[in-house]
Amino acid sequence: MAAYISRQPDNDGTIRRSIVACMAGTLILRIASGAMGLLVGLYLRHLSRNDAIVSASVVGLFAASYFFTELVASPVLGALSDRFGRKPFIVLGPLLGAMAVQLTAVTTLVPLLLVTRLLEGFSSASSIPPTLSYLSAATTRSESLRSKVMSWFEIATIVGLALGSVVGGLLWDRYGQGAFSSVALIYILSAVIFGFGMHRISNAPPGPSPKIGHFLHLLKDPYLLRFAPAWLAMNAVLGLWINHLSFQMSGPTRRAASQLLMTGFSGTTIGIIFAAMAIAFSFGILGWSFLLNRFKKVSIMLWSISGLFLIVLAALLLNHLDRGNLAAIRLAIIPIVIGLLIQSGFTPAALSYLADLSERHVASRGAIMGFYTVLLGVGQLLGSWLGGPFADWGGVDGIIILTGLLGICAAGTVLILRGYISSAPSSAQLAPSETPSLHS
Image (tube, rainbow, N blue to C red; front, top):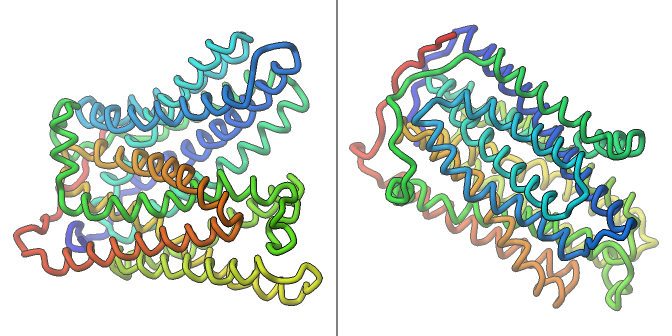
């Protein structure tokens, strides 16, 4: 895979300025998306206090509808961006988001609010795959730049979503239902940055029509087929932690006496813990951005999975420490932070790997990068589903054990992938793609 892109340095200032605009637009888009996600929950709670029929099942349906739409639409819109151009779809994403926010602001009808969440899913599906395709095409000539750009994209995503939650909470407290209009302006700002800051990149013929046969053909690529289970497993860990860890940590249960992490943490404390994990993860990605181009992507994935195993061992130890042993608790937290820093390398390595893989299908970059969103969403759903029985069985211990099992699955898959890449004949390698050309 390392041979798929050339190492010729890319000194074109226009491309670099376009990349900066793309990152800035992505950050603003994620802030708006994060704010919208929080505001919808707050708005539904507000409606439930005013005699609207809003149950926990309805809230779950809202979340599922968003992810379902994003999963289904991402590869299709990514393929359409291959055929008709990336930039229009990138700009369309935040405009759809702004429309969804404004519709939310003017209605109290739950079915119509559900439609706005579907529209939000289309917003993400319209922007993310074409954006990743754009960044892949823009960094074709420089493996070093590609590694950094994919890392920065992940940092922009994490930081943007975190800031979005803060912004959404502040806007709701100050403006109430009027907060939605402010978020719509944030979406529009993102569209403006995308529209005026990014230049069109063209280094491939128009892609094929987004038909089922086309996606099946791409899925048969052995480099994608052997990579997908590892990406699913690692994203399942993310879904497991997000959807089950906070539930187990909040409120005492019958196992609270034997498991430190099930002793009734407050919502504020849990929020601080998750924020600290996100910060550590972001710093880890930043550090890995300077190393990705120096090593094989599959090797970095393996090293990153070792960080996951370090977290598992340290978390098991931490979960069975005595609450009063503060010194031991602090010592146990250190390897968890180190593990997060190490594990954070998997996502940018995986994104860079997919970008390298897109060199095998230069006319279908958007469709290939659309699989990033599909595997991300399916993996999180898988982790959420598997996490229930494990958490019911063992509480936080069950979550930690499942994390280790998913790590074993990911490591085994990456080892198989590395073996395949090592044994692949030279004829299976792809020559460097054409030099990107830019048009105003």
